[in-house]
Amino acid sequence: MIDMELLARKLADAGQGHLLKFFDRLDAETQVRFANELDALDLELLQSLIKSHVLQKPQIALPQDLQPAPYFPLIPRNDSESSYYQKADAAGAELIASGKVAALTVAGGQGSRLGFDGPKGTYPIAPVSGKSLFQYFAESLLSASRKYRTQLHWFIMTSVLNDRMTRDFFAEHDFFGLPENTVHFFTQGFMPAIGYDGKLLMADCGSLALSPDGHGGTLLALRKSGMLELMQQLGVEYLSYFQIDNPLVPVVDKRFIGLHKLENSEMSAITLAKTNAFEKVGNFCIGNGQLLVIEYSDLPEELAQMQDENGRLKFIAGSPAIHVISRKFVERLTAGGRLELDWHRADKKIKCIDCNGNPIDPTEPNGVKLESFIFDALKLADKTMIFEADRKEEFAPTKNATGVDSVESCRLMLTDRDARRLERCGVKIPRRADGTVDAVIEISPLAVWDDADCAAYVRQHDLTAVEAGAKLYLQ
Ligand code: UTP
Image (cartoon, rainbow, N blue to C red):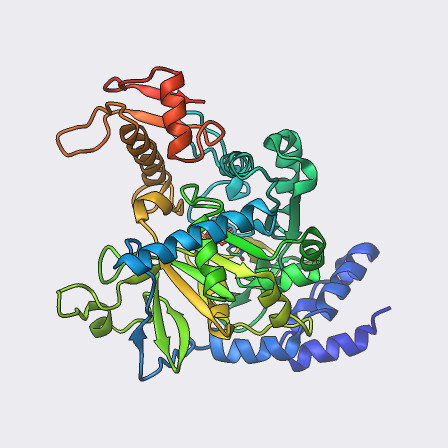
């Protein structure tokens, strides 16, 4: 039973007395639930974050000695690197085949830029079949499992806001053919949203406006949900981490996983060459002897534009948020049941009620959401490793409905990737004068995992050319 007097005093002392304004109007059940919600708040942490991140923009102190981070290049630079990569391929393949690798997808975001009603993973992304992001990944996992003669486990992080809908979606679709006991949902933590005046926002008279605590919440959520123990029981040692909005990413990458292992890395990252100095991706840097990801908005202009002796950007290494993470690293970081990653401020439009209890659906940002980011864990690792990937093979983020990093651009990139695959297998692809593919092509991940599968498919179906303007679904 919560001592309401004490709670009211604590809230008032923290400048949050307004939260009880409508309390007497609530029915008994809602009162109990809301009192518990309020009692569970870490008011001390919130007060300090409001001061540092809400009432003012947080000060980002960049290390003086900031340098670009070194990485393993996509194309090996010499014979010894080449044979090291082959060794990594073998090591990675062995780890995947022996069940030591699982996929970890973060799907707890709100996808507000996409403006889609529902969990982003349910978005129909595939260019011809219209299959959802979840289905696309599920089929990739089935295909990879077949290739490696194993059954990959899939850990999916949801948030309190989309957990039910996500689970229902999988159930309605019979888990897209995956064995149900290999799909493991867990829910991330949340943070209250805060108005610009430092007052916590209320969703209605008896609840706080909550938002998921960022993909950095993954690590603690793995611990709190019991997933780390489950992984241990299953013999899973490495997590292939990717975001729900990037269907181009290989769900497991033997070279990346192998390098992670050979380098004794605790947390590794894929990097892509940035398309321009100000591309909106994080930058891999070394500062104070640590691997840091500096957000594009925080990298000073002169550093972003700095070139090396070959006229190439010095800070070229961008982050597409693809990682391999050792389970033991997560266990170490969260051993005490706590993990303090840096907090980041995001200015957002937050639905809430005003001081009279009337609903507000703002058209401009009206407050702050606080999030932690997974890449901030890199600086806590004893050993890290970065490996370069080919953007067009790995990164097609679906952030917006149109334009840059959108549904449109993602579908085009999926078509391009599948067209290139077919071309490598001798199929003639119609191309416009500017080189773009003059067709919409989709190969089901169930039919093809790699080029060898594609070659077999092409032979079997006697596929020699794709017609201009065709809409083709190969399954
Ligand atoms: P984004 O940073 O793109 O955020 O997430 P978002 O919430 O999906 O989209 P916007 O910003 O509201 O438009 C990148 C990845 O991290 C996951 C997302 O689901 C996506 O896969 N994520 C983000 C979480 O799992 N939890 C979070 O709290 C935030």
